[in-house]
Image 1 (cartoon, rainbow, N blue to C red):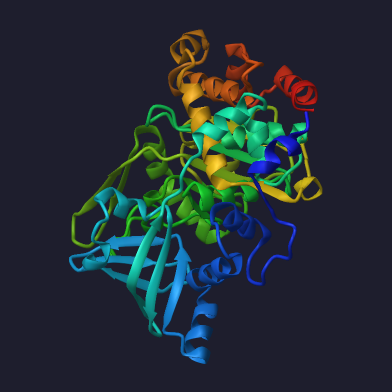
Image 2 (spheres, rainbow, N blue to C red; image 1 turned 180 degrees about the horizontal axis):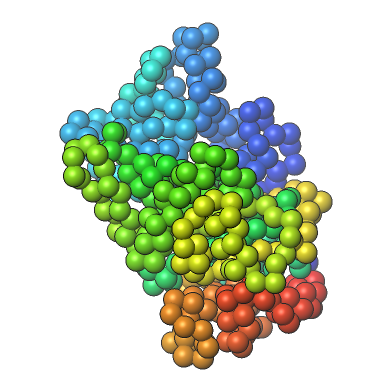
Length: 441
């Protein structure tokens, strides 16, 4: 199948030089999401995200009125209005009068979506003159049309700017499965450790820029994850998902943080309840009830026979995590795979799919997975407890990601049980390899 011919009408070209101050991935995501003059878009993005750039404009050009394009790092609701912390580290003060016409849902969704704001800039903060919420849309109809001819996982992989490679499809199958939340609470929390250069960070940036996830490369503090008692701002959980990257590169402070937040993460993933005891005011606890897609990425150089067992031992020996088995069991997929090493730099092509198409594909995958007989999958599973639940969910999403209108992929539950229980892919790897060759080309 000529994938480029099928998808190119819905793609954005990224052949030109990347503007100074942006990475290629970020530039591609901006082009995929926003129409109009790309130079102006980049200018607004730099102002909202680069503290040195915005100060240079302010001090050298006297530009105290600027347009900023950004996704807030944090948001605090006060009696006088909303305070955003922009990625450029400025406080952005927005009075309630500037938010007239916004619903409560719109205001809360600003935590995870792009904001376009015309601001008055001072040396320390900015005040909003005009503000617009740029909420991401999903083109479900186009996505359905494409999925009739091509598996969603192939569309998503090509859409990130990569040519199709069966090893990359296999690794991306895990990554995009973690993006799907079934029936509102059916998250599929995932840990993936691979050899470096296999595309984890590109997927993480896609999640941040297009899906509204929080993305951090260091383990956060409890305040950063749940709630900052000093400022009143919700932490990373204010976003639509959370990704920790490079978590296998743990320094001394990260060990301490890892030990502190382990129990909070266990309860949060399992029950959707995130609790932080605070000292100010005394005796206060902040409880957030939310099921959040959760992904941990890292680099590894060995491929153990039992991924869960090995990771539990690694967390105990390297991080001092108490009861690491209970922590690891909160994750549906523990994918430690170093034998597959698709070097994405050599697979890059010159297009990315428009963001609304990518969102639409994930929305359709969710709908297809929810239509699967998940109760039957659950009953067929030989696992127990939450592993049994996870195995049923994973099978439903795997099948949805790999099927087309003409080819319906079905797994045996024992195959998915082996993947969930110990990352034993067995013949599934062989199937994916032949499937990519025969169906995708």
